[in-house]
Every structure is written in structure tokens, then in C-alpha cells.
Amino acid sequence: MGTPLLPLLVVLQLLNAHSPAGASPHISAVISQSGLDFAKDLLVSHAAETLTPLSVPDIEKSMSIPLVGTVRMTASGIVLRGLNVTNSTVAVGEKGVVVAASLARANLTMGWSYSYSSWVVTVSDSGNASIQVEGMEVGVSMGIKNQNGSLKLTVMECGCYMKELDITLNGGASWFYQVFIDASSNHIRSSVENAITKKIMEGALKLDSLLANLPKKIDLDSVAAMNVTFVNDPLFKSSSVEFDIDGLFIPSDETAVPRYMILGDIKYTLPLGSSSKMLWISLDEDVFNSVSDLYFKAGLLRRMVDKIPNQFLLNTASWRFLVPQLYQKYPDDNMLLNISAISPPSVRINVGRIDATVDLDVTVNVLDSGKIIPVACMSVSVAVSGAAAVSGNNLGGRVELDYFSFTLKWSQVGKLHTVLVQTVLRIFLKHLFVPYVNSYLEKGFPLPIIKGFSIRDAYILTSYSKLIVSCDVTFIEPEALFPVQTHGRFIL
Image 1: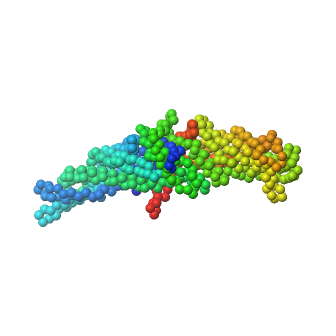
Image 2: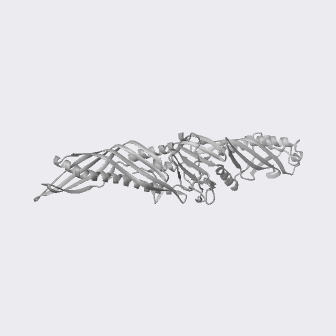
Image 3: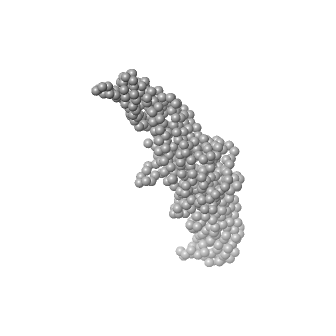
């Protein structure tokens, strides 16, 4: 059977995260009241399914009846078979989340029997019974803390209360019915309450193991992975829960290590109108700069270009009158452009816009008799601006060229014609460089959303140094909430 607590805490975990020493969290995620209600609805519906059928331990009791003597009674095979939930609530306290459900009725079946000795004869009888529970309250209070960059779940309180039992006995002697009901109803009540409470506690233990084994990084590719270890304990507010995540990209072959810190009284305020969205994820611009830094250090921000839309420009014949020395030395030779970033691209996020700059070295090469010969080098500074978008569970985007500037670093073929060079660079940047960058940006990187859930109706805001994704979530893979356990590990 699945754990009834699983959906709630999987949603409360909609992101995995926590960070290294001396740094601040770079992603904050806030689950609003509507998100908590969504989680609660999953919890309650799942609990109603997984709690039944629920077997309750047999009950044995002896009592003395005038004129009869000591009667031994047994209620066996007690099974909770049906639950009808009428109302449920979720509330956030200072240290955790409380979920409560009211059930209009619950159905149980069982067998009953009794026996007693009358002189030398043993009298016994048996039958079956149906039990209708009118009014049941179930509640659980859960705390979540950061433990070495993962989430640690503890159940602070858990209980079940049944109001009224209507027991209908079938078979056997009718004189015994009321005796059995009077003697056994409280025992049946407490046994069912204890069995339900025990089942919830078992589910909490399984969920705690699941949370402890959540991945601490999300691989982007063979180079970069997002560190999604948690920073500090979750922050419980009156109608929301906030999680802080490290969020920076690290090398894919590196282990994500939690960074411990004391942040003090840090508060993340939801934008106006936030109550209508389930989830708000705030990403600092350092998240984007960390991945560009990794790609730069890995040597991936360089490319040899041998084709452009105006291909004739990559032949020395096109330059014969503007750079005579080039054509004289290398007549009718094809040319190559070696583009290399000289520093990591820098991303800046401001209100209503996202900007980025990158400094490049553009080396002009001539392909002469199969040899690549460098003939000139320019330093080019490129500025782009763009917008972000959510596709599936990925955050991507597009950019457009704003402006660029260049200076000649060195030349072996004399001075270059500024206007012509500017024209060639504009063609290259607009029709080759920007589309090439967008081909990667459109793929984006995964937001920290747990498997089984999908983002929908996302809206993006930008403020000073932060990008904020507000969205709802959809539950799309029920089987993702039930991990398969093999060799002591959960497969997610």
C-alpha cells in the first residue's frame, strides 16, 4: 500500500535544495495557500484510497454476566473498507504543516463469537457484523527541517477520533447482541483509531526515507548540473511555505555539497496577486552566470565559422580593393572566423528586462593550401537582451542583438576597412551568432520540479537581479509518487 502522506510532502518538496559555506541561496520557492490546498487535496484523496482496506487487530474480552457466568468474546477479521471524506483543511504553523480531514462515514466488517461454560457444557456462537462510523476526524502535524542539504520529516502529532459507531450483528443468538455491543464498541473504536494512526505514521517513515534520497543535483548536460541542496530550514508562514535552494550550477562530475549559513531574518515577499498561483520560484541572476562560467571554463564558448549567409564575404576576393594586402598574399582563398569568448558572458536582470554581454576575440584566418593561417584579430563586445519563457518544466528564452563594438587587436595584412568589417560582423552576429545562442537558450534548463508534476499557466516577472516564475502545477504521473525500493534505495 502507498503512504497517505506522500502527495502532500512531494508537493511541499516541489524543489530540492540547500547550499555551501558562506554563500546565500540563489533560488527561493514559495508554495502559496492555493498550492497547499492542491497538495492537501492530493493527500486526502490518496489517503482515502490507500487506507482501505485496512485490517485491525482482533479484540478479545471476557466479562461476567449474571446467570451465565464468564463469557469470552472475540471480534475478529475487522476490516475498514470504505471512507467518505466530506471536508479537509491544511494550515501552516510556526514549525510545520497541519492537515485534517473530516469523514462523514466509514464502513467496517468483522466476525464475532462468544463462548462460556455451563456446567459441563461449553456454549458458543458466532456470526458477522457490519459497523457504520458516523463522523471521523483524522489529523497529522508534520515538521520539515534541513538535514545535510536534504529534507527531514518528523510527525509531531497524529491522531484519529471516531464519534459514533453503529454496530449491526448478524447470526447467532439475539440476546447476545446488546451485550456484545456494550462490551466491545469502545475497544473497536480505539483499535480502529490506533490502526489508522499507525498507518499514517508508517507512511511518514516511508516519506522521510524518500525525502532523504531525493537527488541533490539536476544534470543539465555532461558539463553542468544545478546544485539543488537545501539552505536552512523551510520557512513556515501564515499561508505559505518557503524553501531556499543553493541553485548554482556545478560541474556534472562534482558532488553537490550543502553549504551551511545563517541568513538571519530573510523574508521573501510574494508579488501582488500571488494567492492565485500555487508556486513562486525566484532565481537570482547568479544562477545564470554560474552556468555561463562553467561553459567558459570548459572551453565550450568558442567556434570556428566557415559558413555565413553572405558566403562571398568569406573569400579574399571580396576584400581585394578594401584590404589589398590580404588579396595579394592570399588570392581567392577561403576564410575562416575563429570566435572565442575571452570571459564568461554576464547576465543582468532588471525590472522588465534581461540583458547580457559577452566579450569575444574574432580571429580572421585564411585557408591557404590546406593550412589555416591567422591574419587578423578583433576584440568584439556584444550586448543582447531578451525574455524568458517556460516550456514544460524547463526555463528557457530568446535574445536579440542590441549593439556591438569592436577594435582591431592585431593585423598582418594592414588596416581593415571599418565600415566593411562592421557590416560583416553585423551579418555574422545577427544571422549566425544570435540564432546559435537561441538554439541553446530555447532548450533551457529544468526548474526544480519533482517528477510526476508539470508546470502550467506560468507567468514570468523580472525585478532587480531576480527572475520570478509564478505558476500552477498539474499532477500528471500518479505512479511517480510510489517509488520502487530496491537494495535499500528508492528509484525516482
